[in-house]
Amino acid sequence: MNGSRLRRLTLVLAVVAATVRPTTGWSVEPVFVVADTGDATRLAIPSVAAEFGSFADVSEAVEADRQRMTALERRIQELETDKAAESLPAPAAESDTKDPKTDKDANKDDKEPPKPYEIGSDTNLASKWASGYHAESKQKDFRIKIGGRTQVDAVAFTAGPGPGNQAPNKGGLDPALADTVAFRRARFRMEGRMYEFYDWAAEYDFVNQINVNNETYPTERDAGPLTAVTDLWLQLREIPILGTVRVGNQKDPFGYEHLTSSRWLNFMERSFSQDAFEGPFNNGFLPGIQILNSNEEGDIAWQIGEFKNTTNPFGFNNSSGGSMTVGRLIFLPVFEDEGRKLLHLAISGRTMEPRRQYTSFDNETGLPTGDPINAVRFRSRGSIRNGPPGPLNSIYADAGLLQGSWQNMIGLEFVGNNGPWSFQSEYFGSWLYNASTTSAGPLVTNGYQPAPGTKVGTVYFQSGYAEVLYFLTGESRTYSKIEYRFDRPVPHNNFYAVRGGGSGRRLSVSEGAWQVGVRYNYLCLSDGEVNGGVLNGCTLGLNWLLNPNARVYFNYDFTYRDFSSTPFKKQKDGSIVPSPSYDGSGCIHGFGTRLAFDF
Image (cartoon, rainbow, N blue to C red; front, top):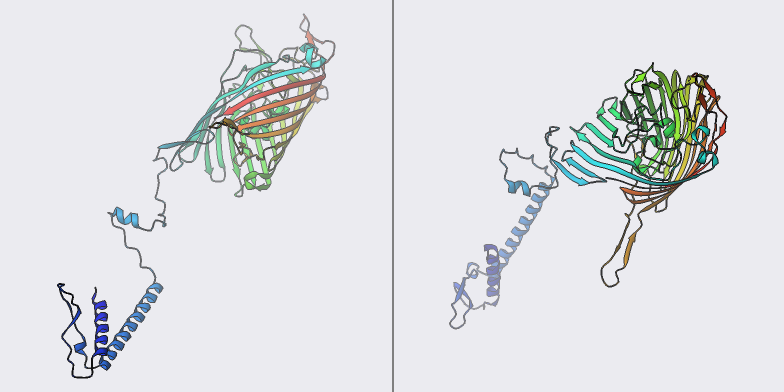
């Protein structure tokens, strides 16, 4: 028992003793006995009653004690108020040696300021799965992704008399249609970041049947498959004024569907525009340098670059000329909920010298003979392919190899996204100046009209498409503000079908994501005397997304081909004369399915 409580107890006992004391001459004992039981040891407490002469003295002592306690409580209250009003003292300087227990018990909510970090000093990578294998350093200045894509197709066709059963020199398709099973793409890819500001990509496609001179001889067979390069570039980000600068083999910024990855195309194939204008003969990839940038809000962006105009998928060109300047301007008047609701408007353009290429080769050595010419070929294959990339696919429309002095192209983009609905459309136009027909390539190719050597002036070809898609399961397209195009769609639920345990073994099913779409497709390669043909197509699609990395396509395509052929024959004396005309017009029906997955 502490001293304060003991004092209060003795005061109470003193009051009791004074109260019961008789008025007669009764003297107070110096010791007050609390208990006295038999053999127990006597507990004696010194009596304080002897210190007081009367009850009045006791009352005065009690009152004085009460006043002192009140004064102490008031003082304590004042001190606590003053302490709360005072500012916190400045923290003491840290010593070189810290007590780990003290640091651990310090205020954990207060975050320490970031410590200086030397870029590139931490090269330890932690791996994870994020729609593919990723490894990344703690400071995110090093990262790597290893992956690839595989697409396998099964297709079947039926066609009317013109394109279906006529020989190529009589207006038929070259090569002829065939029901096939083939790998459309088989690519291996590595991409990443190093030293925070450097990005890189290296991708190779192992399914190609393309020869080096495929623009001059588009149906010539070659050994395959041949490994081709697609993305093979290095870029530097966050450069003042310029933004991002990318150098290497890459897609030039011309066309929305062109820039959209083949991993999440809306249909099995892009439109006729891709084959005729956006990425003819080179798989859509060109060696060059490109600048990508946008305003701070990201609703206005621009891309511009200088590229080498190649005609093969190997990033190869061994002739002078063929330089190509490309630009694209994008405006997003509506962009909400990370692109789930958006309106995308863009215009792009190309200006270029036609590729300088040889048109004749030695049969024994394979080396070119004669002088190269500036020439370009416009052709398109179908919306469903009957072979791997290369000369095995049927050509639906072909204007032949046209010589020209300069070429300009324009592209218009109109894209919308609103929840599960998406709309996408583009228009393309191409001007070839001082054009003339040539005798290069096989004379049976159905695009050689009029006679070789005919000057046809400025030739204008055009194409366009419009497509509408809807997610039956409620998903929405995602959008990338890096290249301003659609990105990977992600299902709400992955597909699975499993039986549970127990006696009932009930089947549990998740449907994945389902999307339906329709596309109208148009291409005109006829202008003036040049008659390369006109295509009108309609594609119906059903896409089943098993998970973010795998999907199954089901496509039906109807294409009407309007084409009349007047091929030319070479006489014994070397002269070329026209042969009778043939009508190659008619309907082409195609059905295709594709299993596509990437990692």
